[in-house]
Image (cartoon, rainbow, N blue to C red; front, side, top):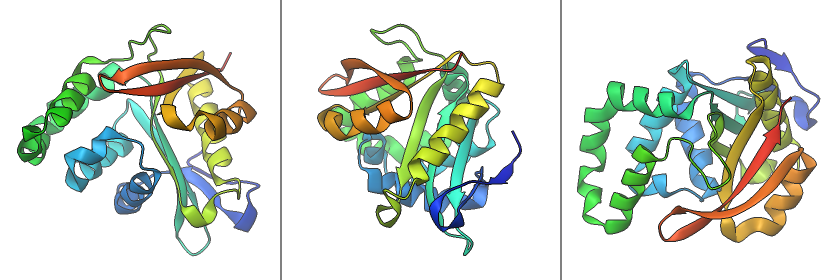
Length: 209
């Protein structure tokens, strides 16, 4: 897949790979989406994670940018979730630890950290190496096709790399709207499970074969 190409989206958005300098805007969009325990680790940690996604050979980032340079939506995914997590720990573990240490006084943050470090793609629906990481579309750009375009471009890249399936999680409390959106993109709803000990997430899978 080429790094950049014009897509048939409203307002003539450009679909391209994310760059390190995009990180602050991606963090803003990620915060708007709301569903993620990673917010509890603070904006510094989220920013560091997105920088690693963009630079890591084990992950990729796709953004939708308008002609004025504004990023209206993005999506990220890991080609190998376990390798991505281990490389993040190896490269940024000490710095990330300093960032989140004051927040580990809260039990839910300890549970989040433990699960992130031990999950490695294991789910009740089978192990999944290729998976979604983060996703965000600006409020003003919803229903303009931005989410669909970045999602489909991400699927194209995973397919080109030989992936047979792609899995991702959404907020378990938003099944109605999420089901309609992701079914239209060819995703199969597998069900809910406790991704974190005290909350449920809905899992979807896309057949890329």
